[in-house]
Image (cartoon, rainbow, N blue to C red; front, side, top):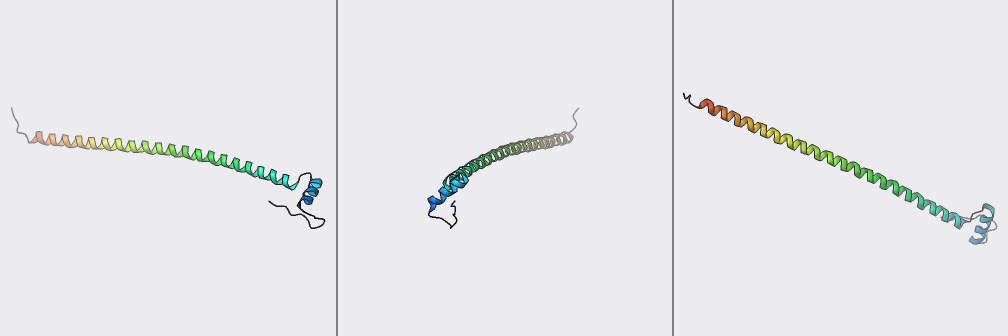
Length: 106
């Protein structure tokens, strides 16, 4: 960041800094340094906020992945249960038909 001095009575950067410092209490170089520190601090705070948001997003993603895995497990168990029930029904029907087809023995 560069400050431009007014043309009147300007004899160089050092003179302007001295005049500015005398009239405002802070030299341009001090102001530049303070602004630089302020910008760095703001960026550090923004980085911390973004890291916090990223951590939250990762946490939410982990939770959603766990929910998805639980649903997959549920579907798998229901499918296995359905298949075993259907298989049991088929076996029962085969057995019933076989018994019906047997001759009656006394």
